Length: 273
Image 1 (spheres, one colour):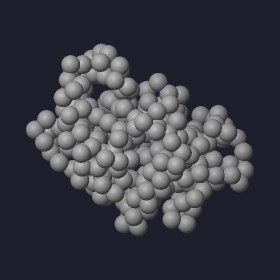
Image 2 (cartoon, rainbow, N blue to C red):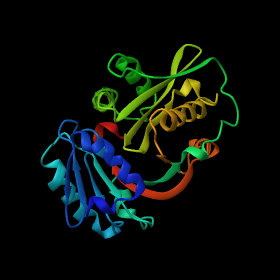
Image 3 (spheres, helix red, strand yellow):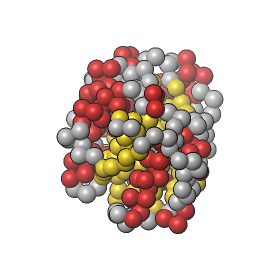
Image 4 (cartoon, one colour):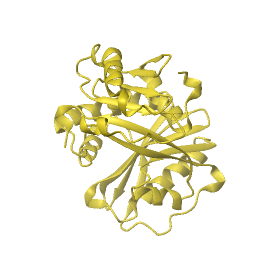
């Protein structure tokens, strides 16, 4: 499989992989491995050109072990992306082996399509670009509030490593991270990475105590406008769970779905819910 074959969502995922991942084009898949961050699931993964069959579970477990697990035992998860236009078939054997699978909608927006939020956010709102290194502890604490069952110590380390990666990219002009304060409290954040005139959102998240106040809409609108007006972007992409309420927020701001991508994942033992 070749990098040139990547769909629009996976293509922008590789903006981050270029930072310090080892990427290999194999006949049957693309291998992504990040030795400096072995617990980063989607920095240590296989990307397939077509959905696997249910009967291929053992084969792909062996491939993942050979390409990633055997080289870095700390990668005790299994993450497989699917670069295809059709959804995977039923995967009962995978599910019985502890795998989850799902879809992401790939959304796009151009400068002339940005819409104002449907309703104003409640509270006194400030959105600004962060100094990642200086504000790292507050950012990581915010991220821990949405860790979704992941081991706290491991997730903290993962987010610290990720944010330092974004900080390096920010120093090179390839990324920026933004925070939203509501009534003086850091309540939401997101990133924006870029390659030329193409941008990609990273991790739009709101603290659970500050949801349903219009904060996500205010943040995404402000950062989208920043990308177009200050960074000169001509296209911004994001990926979102099509079943999550957040996708309605993004669509209300003008984002439109252009593709789907699929994933199959088995969490590391310490991260299982």
